[in-house]
Length: 221
Image (cartoon, rainbow, N blue to C red):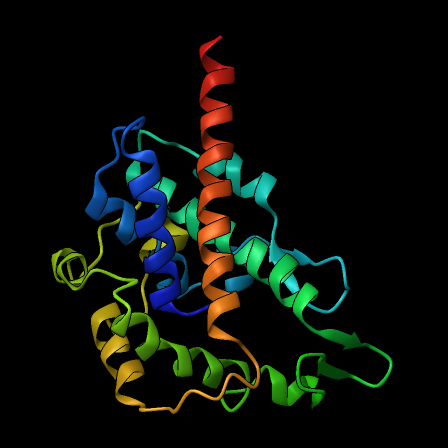
């Protein structure tokens, strides 16, 4: 996952684009965007995982997820689908396009600065996940996520009606977010570069809205 705040900022962007044409419950939609990462079940199942085009990363099987979760009049499930949509393009496009993946030597190389890491390090708490933490404060400072909306989302998220997603980890999302934000990590940009990452969020939200609009118009014909 590309971090809780990133999913919430993406959801906020998508909501602003789709609310004029869909009757979305904003809080349920935002909550839905959090649920896949908080389910207790195996992420292989909750994220409909399959291998990405580079054979290293995993991405959601969007076609399968769409069959079960693409329900615009169910704001929670639609939000869950939006979460998986962002994961799909983050891992399947943004990361693949941003780095060089040396499968033979199990190395990841950043062409911006020629830094390289082993696969194990790159996907560790000190690698990619630390980079998520670097960007958190920048996103909050730039008001990429509305603090008012964060306060409105209930600490105990609503049930989805799908057993796989309704057994949750013990830590609530708000406590997890508090723990996440308590790690004051200075921004270096060694792995993820904030401007390009935010551009990706905006572009993907725009694409999600266009895809939804096209499907809606096709069904109305």
